Structure formats: structure tokens, C-alpha cells
Image 1 (tube, rainbow, N blue to C red):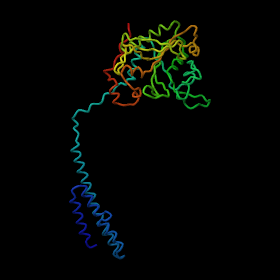
Image 2 (image 1 turned 60 degrees about the horizontal axis):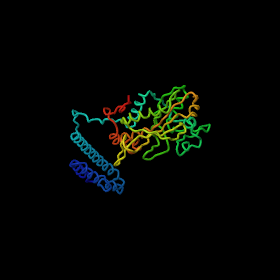
Image 3 (image 1 turned 45 degrees about the vertical axis):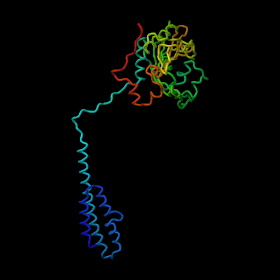
Image 4 (image 1 turned 120 degrees about the vertical axis):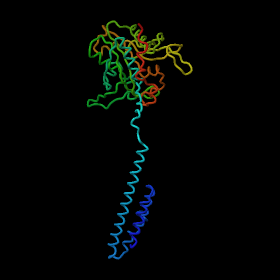
Length: 358
């Protein structure tokens, strides 16, 4: 133990001479590591005579504390100098202009819904809304959809757990329940569009579990099939910005309309591209028909005095056709690159397109 002073001075000199944190760490290990000199000396204290053990322990602990304090101080000095270097090298020039903030984009679905409301608003329709969670009556029964219809099955519809009475709510499969609720609240005439989210158990390139629909309803004492055709022809021309787009009505079947029809628009397919408004091909875009008398009766309306028409379309579908979007699933992926490409800047938002023919 006689050379403790020399040992302390040598290590203090080594600590003071360390050029960086790495070399300082080597000094620390040589002193306090598992095989360091102070560590070895501490192990040897137990072998001393009892009268020498206490004095040797006190002396070693004193040297140990001095060296530990010196290493900590040197380490703090290195860290302070390193921080100063970083502050110098990473200095920010606060006089520089701020980085430009990325401009937000309007989603194609939002844009399409605005266009639809603008077009039908000019035709005198008003917007009606209803709940996303519906009951069986408003979603199926009131619309003349029979008990055995596939749409009522679990593989097509999202059902919620049953209540105390066993009745099960569901996520609406179309916006038609809005029409039912509207007709129940007030007597005719009615001239509304229902726009919102709908839900079905389906997912592929042309279907998503959640999507958007717009449905229209007109009920009064004189409306007939000719009014329905005129309304939808004007809509197609306004939305697709083609004044003479061919439109045809094909006989079809829906439980809630009679007669019913599918609406097709003329198009041309060539070289993997689709052009609306020309050619000898057809593309289905929506369904329509005269409101079934049973639907009117379910809403408390005298079908002998009133009649009307209804139509429905998928917002994603017509957005894909107009803006060239190939996969409906991309609408819901929250990909900013996709939105930057297909979205609309505030100053670039198209109007309601060509407007209505006068």
C-alpha cells in the first residue's frame, strides 16, 4: 500500500491527459474495471492482518474517490465541449424564411359529392340525412325487400348484436332508409337527395366495405317516367361535361321500384382507355325506377293519389369514371401521394362542371 500516492498521481495524470471520451474510458477501465489496479488492490485487503485491514481500506477508498471524481469531472468537460461544437455546427439562421407548408388537397370523394349536390340543387332537390345504424324495417321491410332476399343475409350485411328483445340493428346497406324516414315525417310532395356512407360485406377492386351513395326521390301527384328520364339525362350531361352523351334505360328489377331500369351512358374503349360520350359501347352508372306502390303504402302515402321516381348511384363509381381512378380501394388508403395526384387544390376545384342545359 506504500505506493498509493504514486498510483494516484499517475492515474490523475492519465485522466488529465485523456484527449477524448474514448481514451478517458480506457483510463477508467484500467482503474475500476474487473481487472483494474484499484479493483485488484481492493481484493487484496481481505488478505491483510486485521490491524492493517482498516487503514488499508480507508486509504484505498480515499484514492478511489479522488480518481472517480477526476474521471467524472473530465467526462463532464468533454460533454460540455461536445455540446458547444454541436451548437456551433448546428446553428440555425433564424433570419431565413420558413419552409413552405404543404398545401392540402380536396379528396375526390368530397369534390364529387359537392358536384352532385350542386347539380341536383339546381334541379330543386334538397338534402336529407339519416342515421348510419338502422333497423330492419327502414332498411329492408319498408322498401318491399322480402325476408328471403340475399341482402338480408349475414354475408351481405353488417349486423350488430341483438338487443333485449332479440332485434338486431345493422349498418345501413344503402341510403334508401333516409327516403323512408323522410316520407314518414311529412306528406307529399317530396323532392330530396340522400347522400352519405353505406356499408356492405364486400371488398375487391370495385367494392369496399364502406362506400358512399347518393339517392334521389320525387313524390307528388303528377310525376311520371318521362320526368325521371329527363332528370337523369340532364344529370349525366352536366356531371360528365358532355352535352350530347348518349343515355339509355334498360329494363331491370328492384324490389322498391316498378317499373325499374338501369341507366347506361355511351362510351368508347380503345387502347386500354375509356372515353365517355362516344363510340358504340355502353357503361352502366346507376339504377332507377318509379317508386313501388307498396313502398308508398308502408310510409302512409296513398298510392292512388301520389306517385314518383327514385334513383341511386355510387359516388366512388362515378368519381372513378370521371377522374380516371382505377381501384376503388385507394379512396380509403390515406396515401398522401395518391391524394396529391388525384386531389384538388383549392384554386383548381372544378365547378359543377358544364352546368344544366337551359
